[in-house]
Image 1: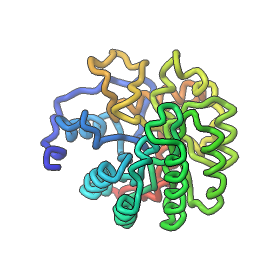
Image 2 (image 1 turned 180 degrees about the vertical axis):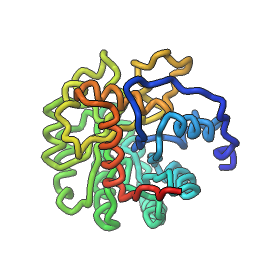
Image 3 (image 1 turned 60 degrees about the vertical axis):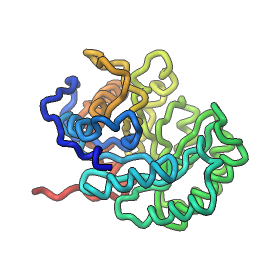
Length: 288
């Protein structure tokens, strides 16, 4: 864990983002991913320089959730984490994992239960395991009065059917890395979900449905995220030499989202930051 706190290289630059002036919060970042092992502190510093003022570190299984929690507890002013089991790892869920998650839910920086949900695109875990693990984590979210950080891919009917059984008792919920179109968005809004927009919105090839939906997301339901190291924005200029996404590119997601909504990027930055703090019950840092 010590390697995560190497001295930052303040000389590393980030690409400029036109039309943006304001601080943003990355509500979904896999900072514990092994691709960041060599320069994690520098990644964070580059993001700060780019205007990212807060980071929510995603937990995808017990080990990653513990790592994210430890990192966030080191700097609760800037960091929060989630704790949960991704549908890809649903088969690993059992009493021991649940006990570990329960311990993490007590940490001051654990902002949500998840990443949890359903993923029928790859079926890395059998679908019955996915459904039961998803339902159990929703029960835990109700018990601990935590928001849920949700994942859905090619499983819409089962996902919404299960979620709807618990939604009334959940304090809040966010469908992270939303890639659907207007019809999918309508279903999300029927359940009063927050919607997380990633660099997928910057992809003119795969993001057509999302780009059509973005203007219809209510301002108070909109969030932005990188899902780094995945989904680097294709619109970055100059193009980075690496395909690894970083939180420093979040302002580009903000810029493209604003362009599609025909508003100033500063407005999106302000609104999504307020929404993130509301969702995760995360007070703004006090002036120094």
